[in-house]
Length: 306
Ligand code: GDP
Ligand code: ZN
Image (cartoon, rainbow, N blue to C red; front, side, top):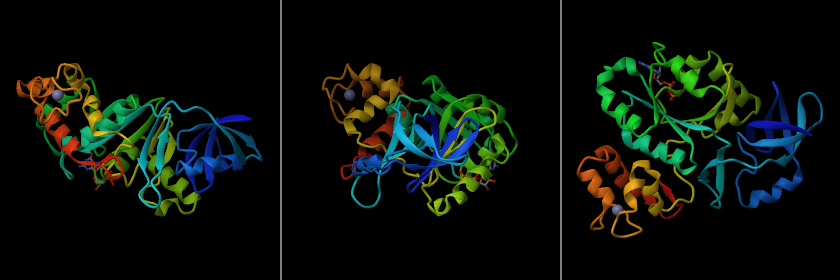
């Protein structure tokens, strides 16, 4: 058996990368059992073992243990976990300075995904050519102070593209971000033809292209691979409780143990160390305010923050 990595899956057909070759693989029947609990038993980024049928196809026999995974609840039918990507190294939260305007609330939601799975969080501020860099200096500093990697860039002028390549090199990165921020343009700036490849692969599977939430990973010439996640505007978190949200804001953790009430929502309780820190400026106002908004947007129905 050979060990490969899943780049995309559609229906019961999976594209597996083995060395530099792609194999179109079906699943061994035993995986159908897992379908009762998860929407997709094998996800993008999974490491698997497969047997080769010929130079282009094979059968997936075994799923190797996952280091982590990012998931969504399914939107239709019975509520199940849908794994978006597995064995992820970092989340790249893509935003733009303008068109659409920069909203730190979106950055913080995307970072929750990274914190939840203990992944490196990268913030990519695109369209820096449309403003003066000073205009986003506060935002850059807020996240750099929290030890997140921040890259201000422009897919149009090329500023910051080489820096992003270095950040992505040899890692499996998942791009998140609302549509219009320039994710496709960034992919093309990183490696001309990369985005094209995404389309080709989707076309290859036939129906993928028409599925707005279709995810595929593409290997980069400079090393590593990227998964774009179109159609996940409201990227939520699977199965997380509101009480956990505070611990996913990394700078809250050092204060949370000192709150009078435990658990503490850090919103309404008296003698709350997090709220105190916010009031005296030790926690950035935007971060605390975004936290309150996220906390209050918890959706009981499917346990996500919308
Ligand atoms: P996506 O929906 O995130 O994939 O965004 P696109 O890559 O389709 O880009 C949306 C629009 O923003 C397009 O009109 C791009 O030409 C434009 N765009 C992307 N990156 C930049 C940039 O760095 N600067 C400027 N000025 N425009 C950009
Ligand atoms: Zn508190």
